[in-house]
Image (cartoon, rainbow, N blue to C red; front, side, top):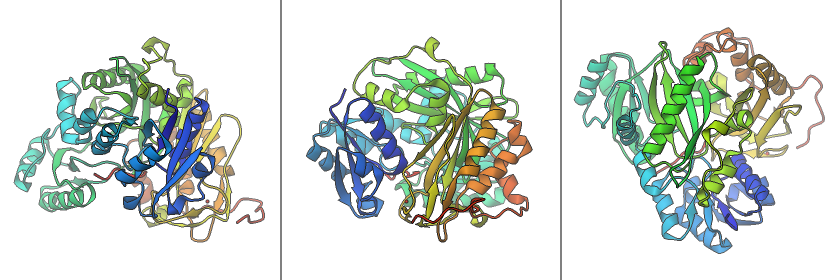
Length: 476
């Protein structure tokens, strides 16, 4: 195992990785920006190195500064968390060139998989089913129109280098395509420095199901079951659960086994997630593979009892996989909701501000991953994720009831600060969601319905005295 690991991230994921390292007896070092000088990760790490101002481009996306920090603290490995540089193959290669182990797949594998069109081609050759559409990028609007006519509308235009729900445009009629194609290419160039796009059939009534895999450098791999991530706004997730509900066990097993086969055939190493769309006929289609720990990884940990960050560290250190597939057992149901500082009433616009109150829930089988506290300043510089509330129960009904109870306990407030808690409550009250028969269209359907609920987080029933605290995404 490594002596020292540098954590190249911030917020709740930096704290999550730091705790895992300490549990394994590994010294920790974190990098931080000027905005995060008072963060709990900085306070708890064995060493902390300031690498720049609040701007992520000059701090958490500054590869040279991060490598220099690793040298200063004598780290042998770098854990990138999620977002920022976590799926940047160039950064992984820079780490290797400087004698640092990047905790993730090899750079060549990341290069192939970070490009969505390349990943589609690789997975198609590995036998994974794809959504109808182009495998290679489409170079012109005319070529995009030919693909769209062949597969049928609606279609979705996607950035080949995209991620985190960005670089995607749904096109419902031929008249919209040319403009959407140009807009998506321009957005992709601005966000990722790469304007290539591809086109595939857009499934309007589909489930978003993903599979967690662990693969070592010795050719071994296991899958840890499925997660459902269909509750999304702007292609970004709000509620996740494991295992995926209301699908036959045979279908879930086939998806998981297919995902693992694909990961092993492309030489994947580390903790990864393969994402699929499942249509109304229960046929599944490969979407993409994520070469990092996912925001929603806790639900898998809760139903398997396996610490995924521990496994990442062991795999990166060259240890053969410590699990065999027959040893993986799923127990009960886990559900996670993301608490973002956003206003659902204004298209989920970020609402930065200082938190005057912050009391997360507790109780049996309730986990809260957060870096915030009373007095914390939610700044405008980073992703709006404030906390993740994760619950476990023997069955889904109790898990949902437990999550409702936990959200009722969550007290967070500050001038101008809104959260997604009231909207998540609407999701949990939805009849289709309660039955497990929801699709990626759930959020749009709820937003289209009038509601008398306030978008701000309501005050607690007995107000206490005030006690004035990616997803970052990869940028290539």
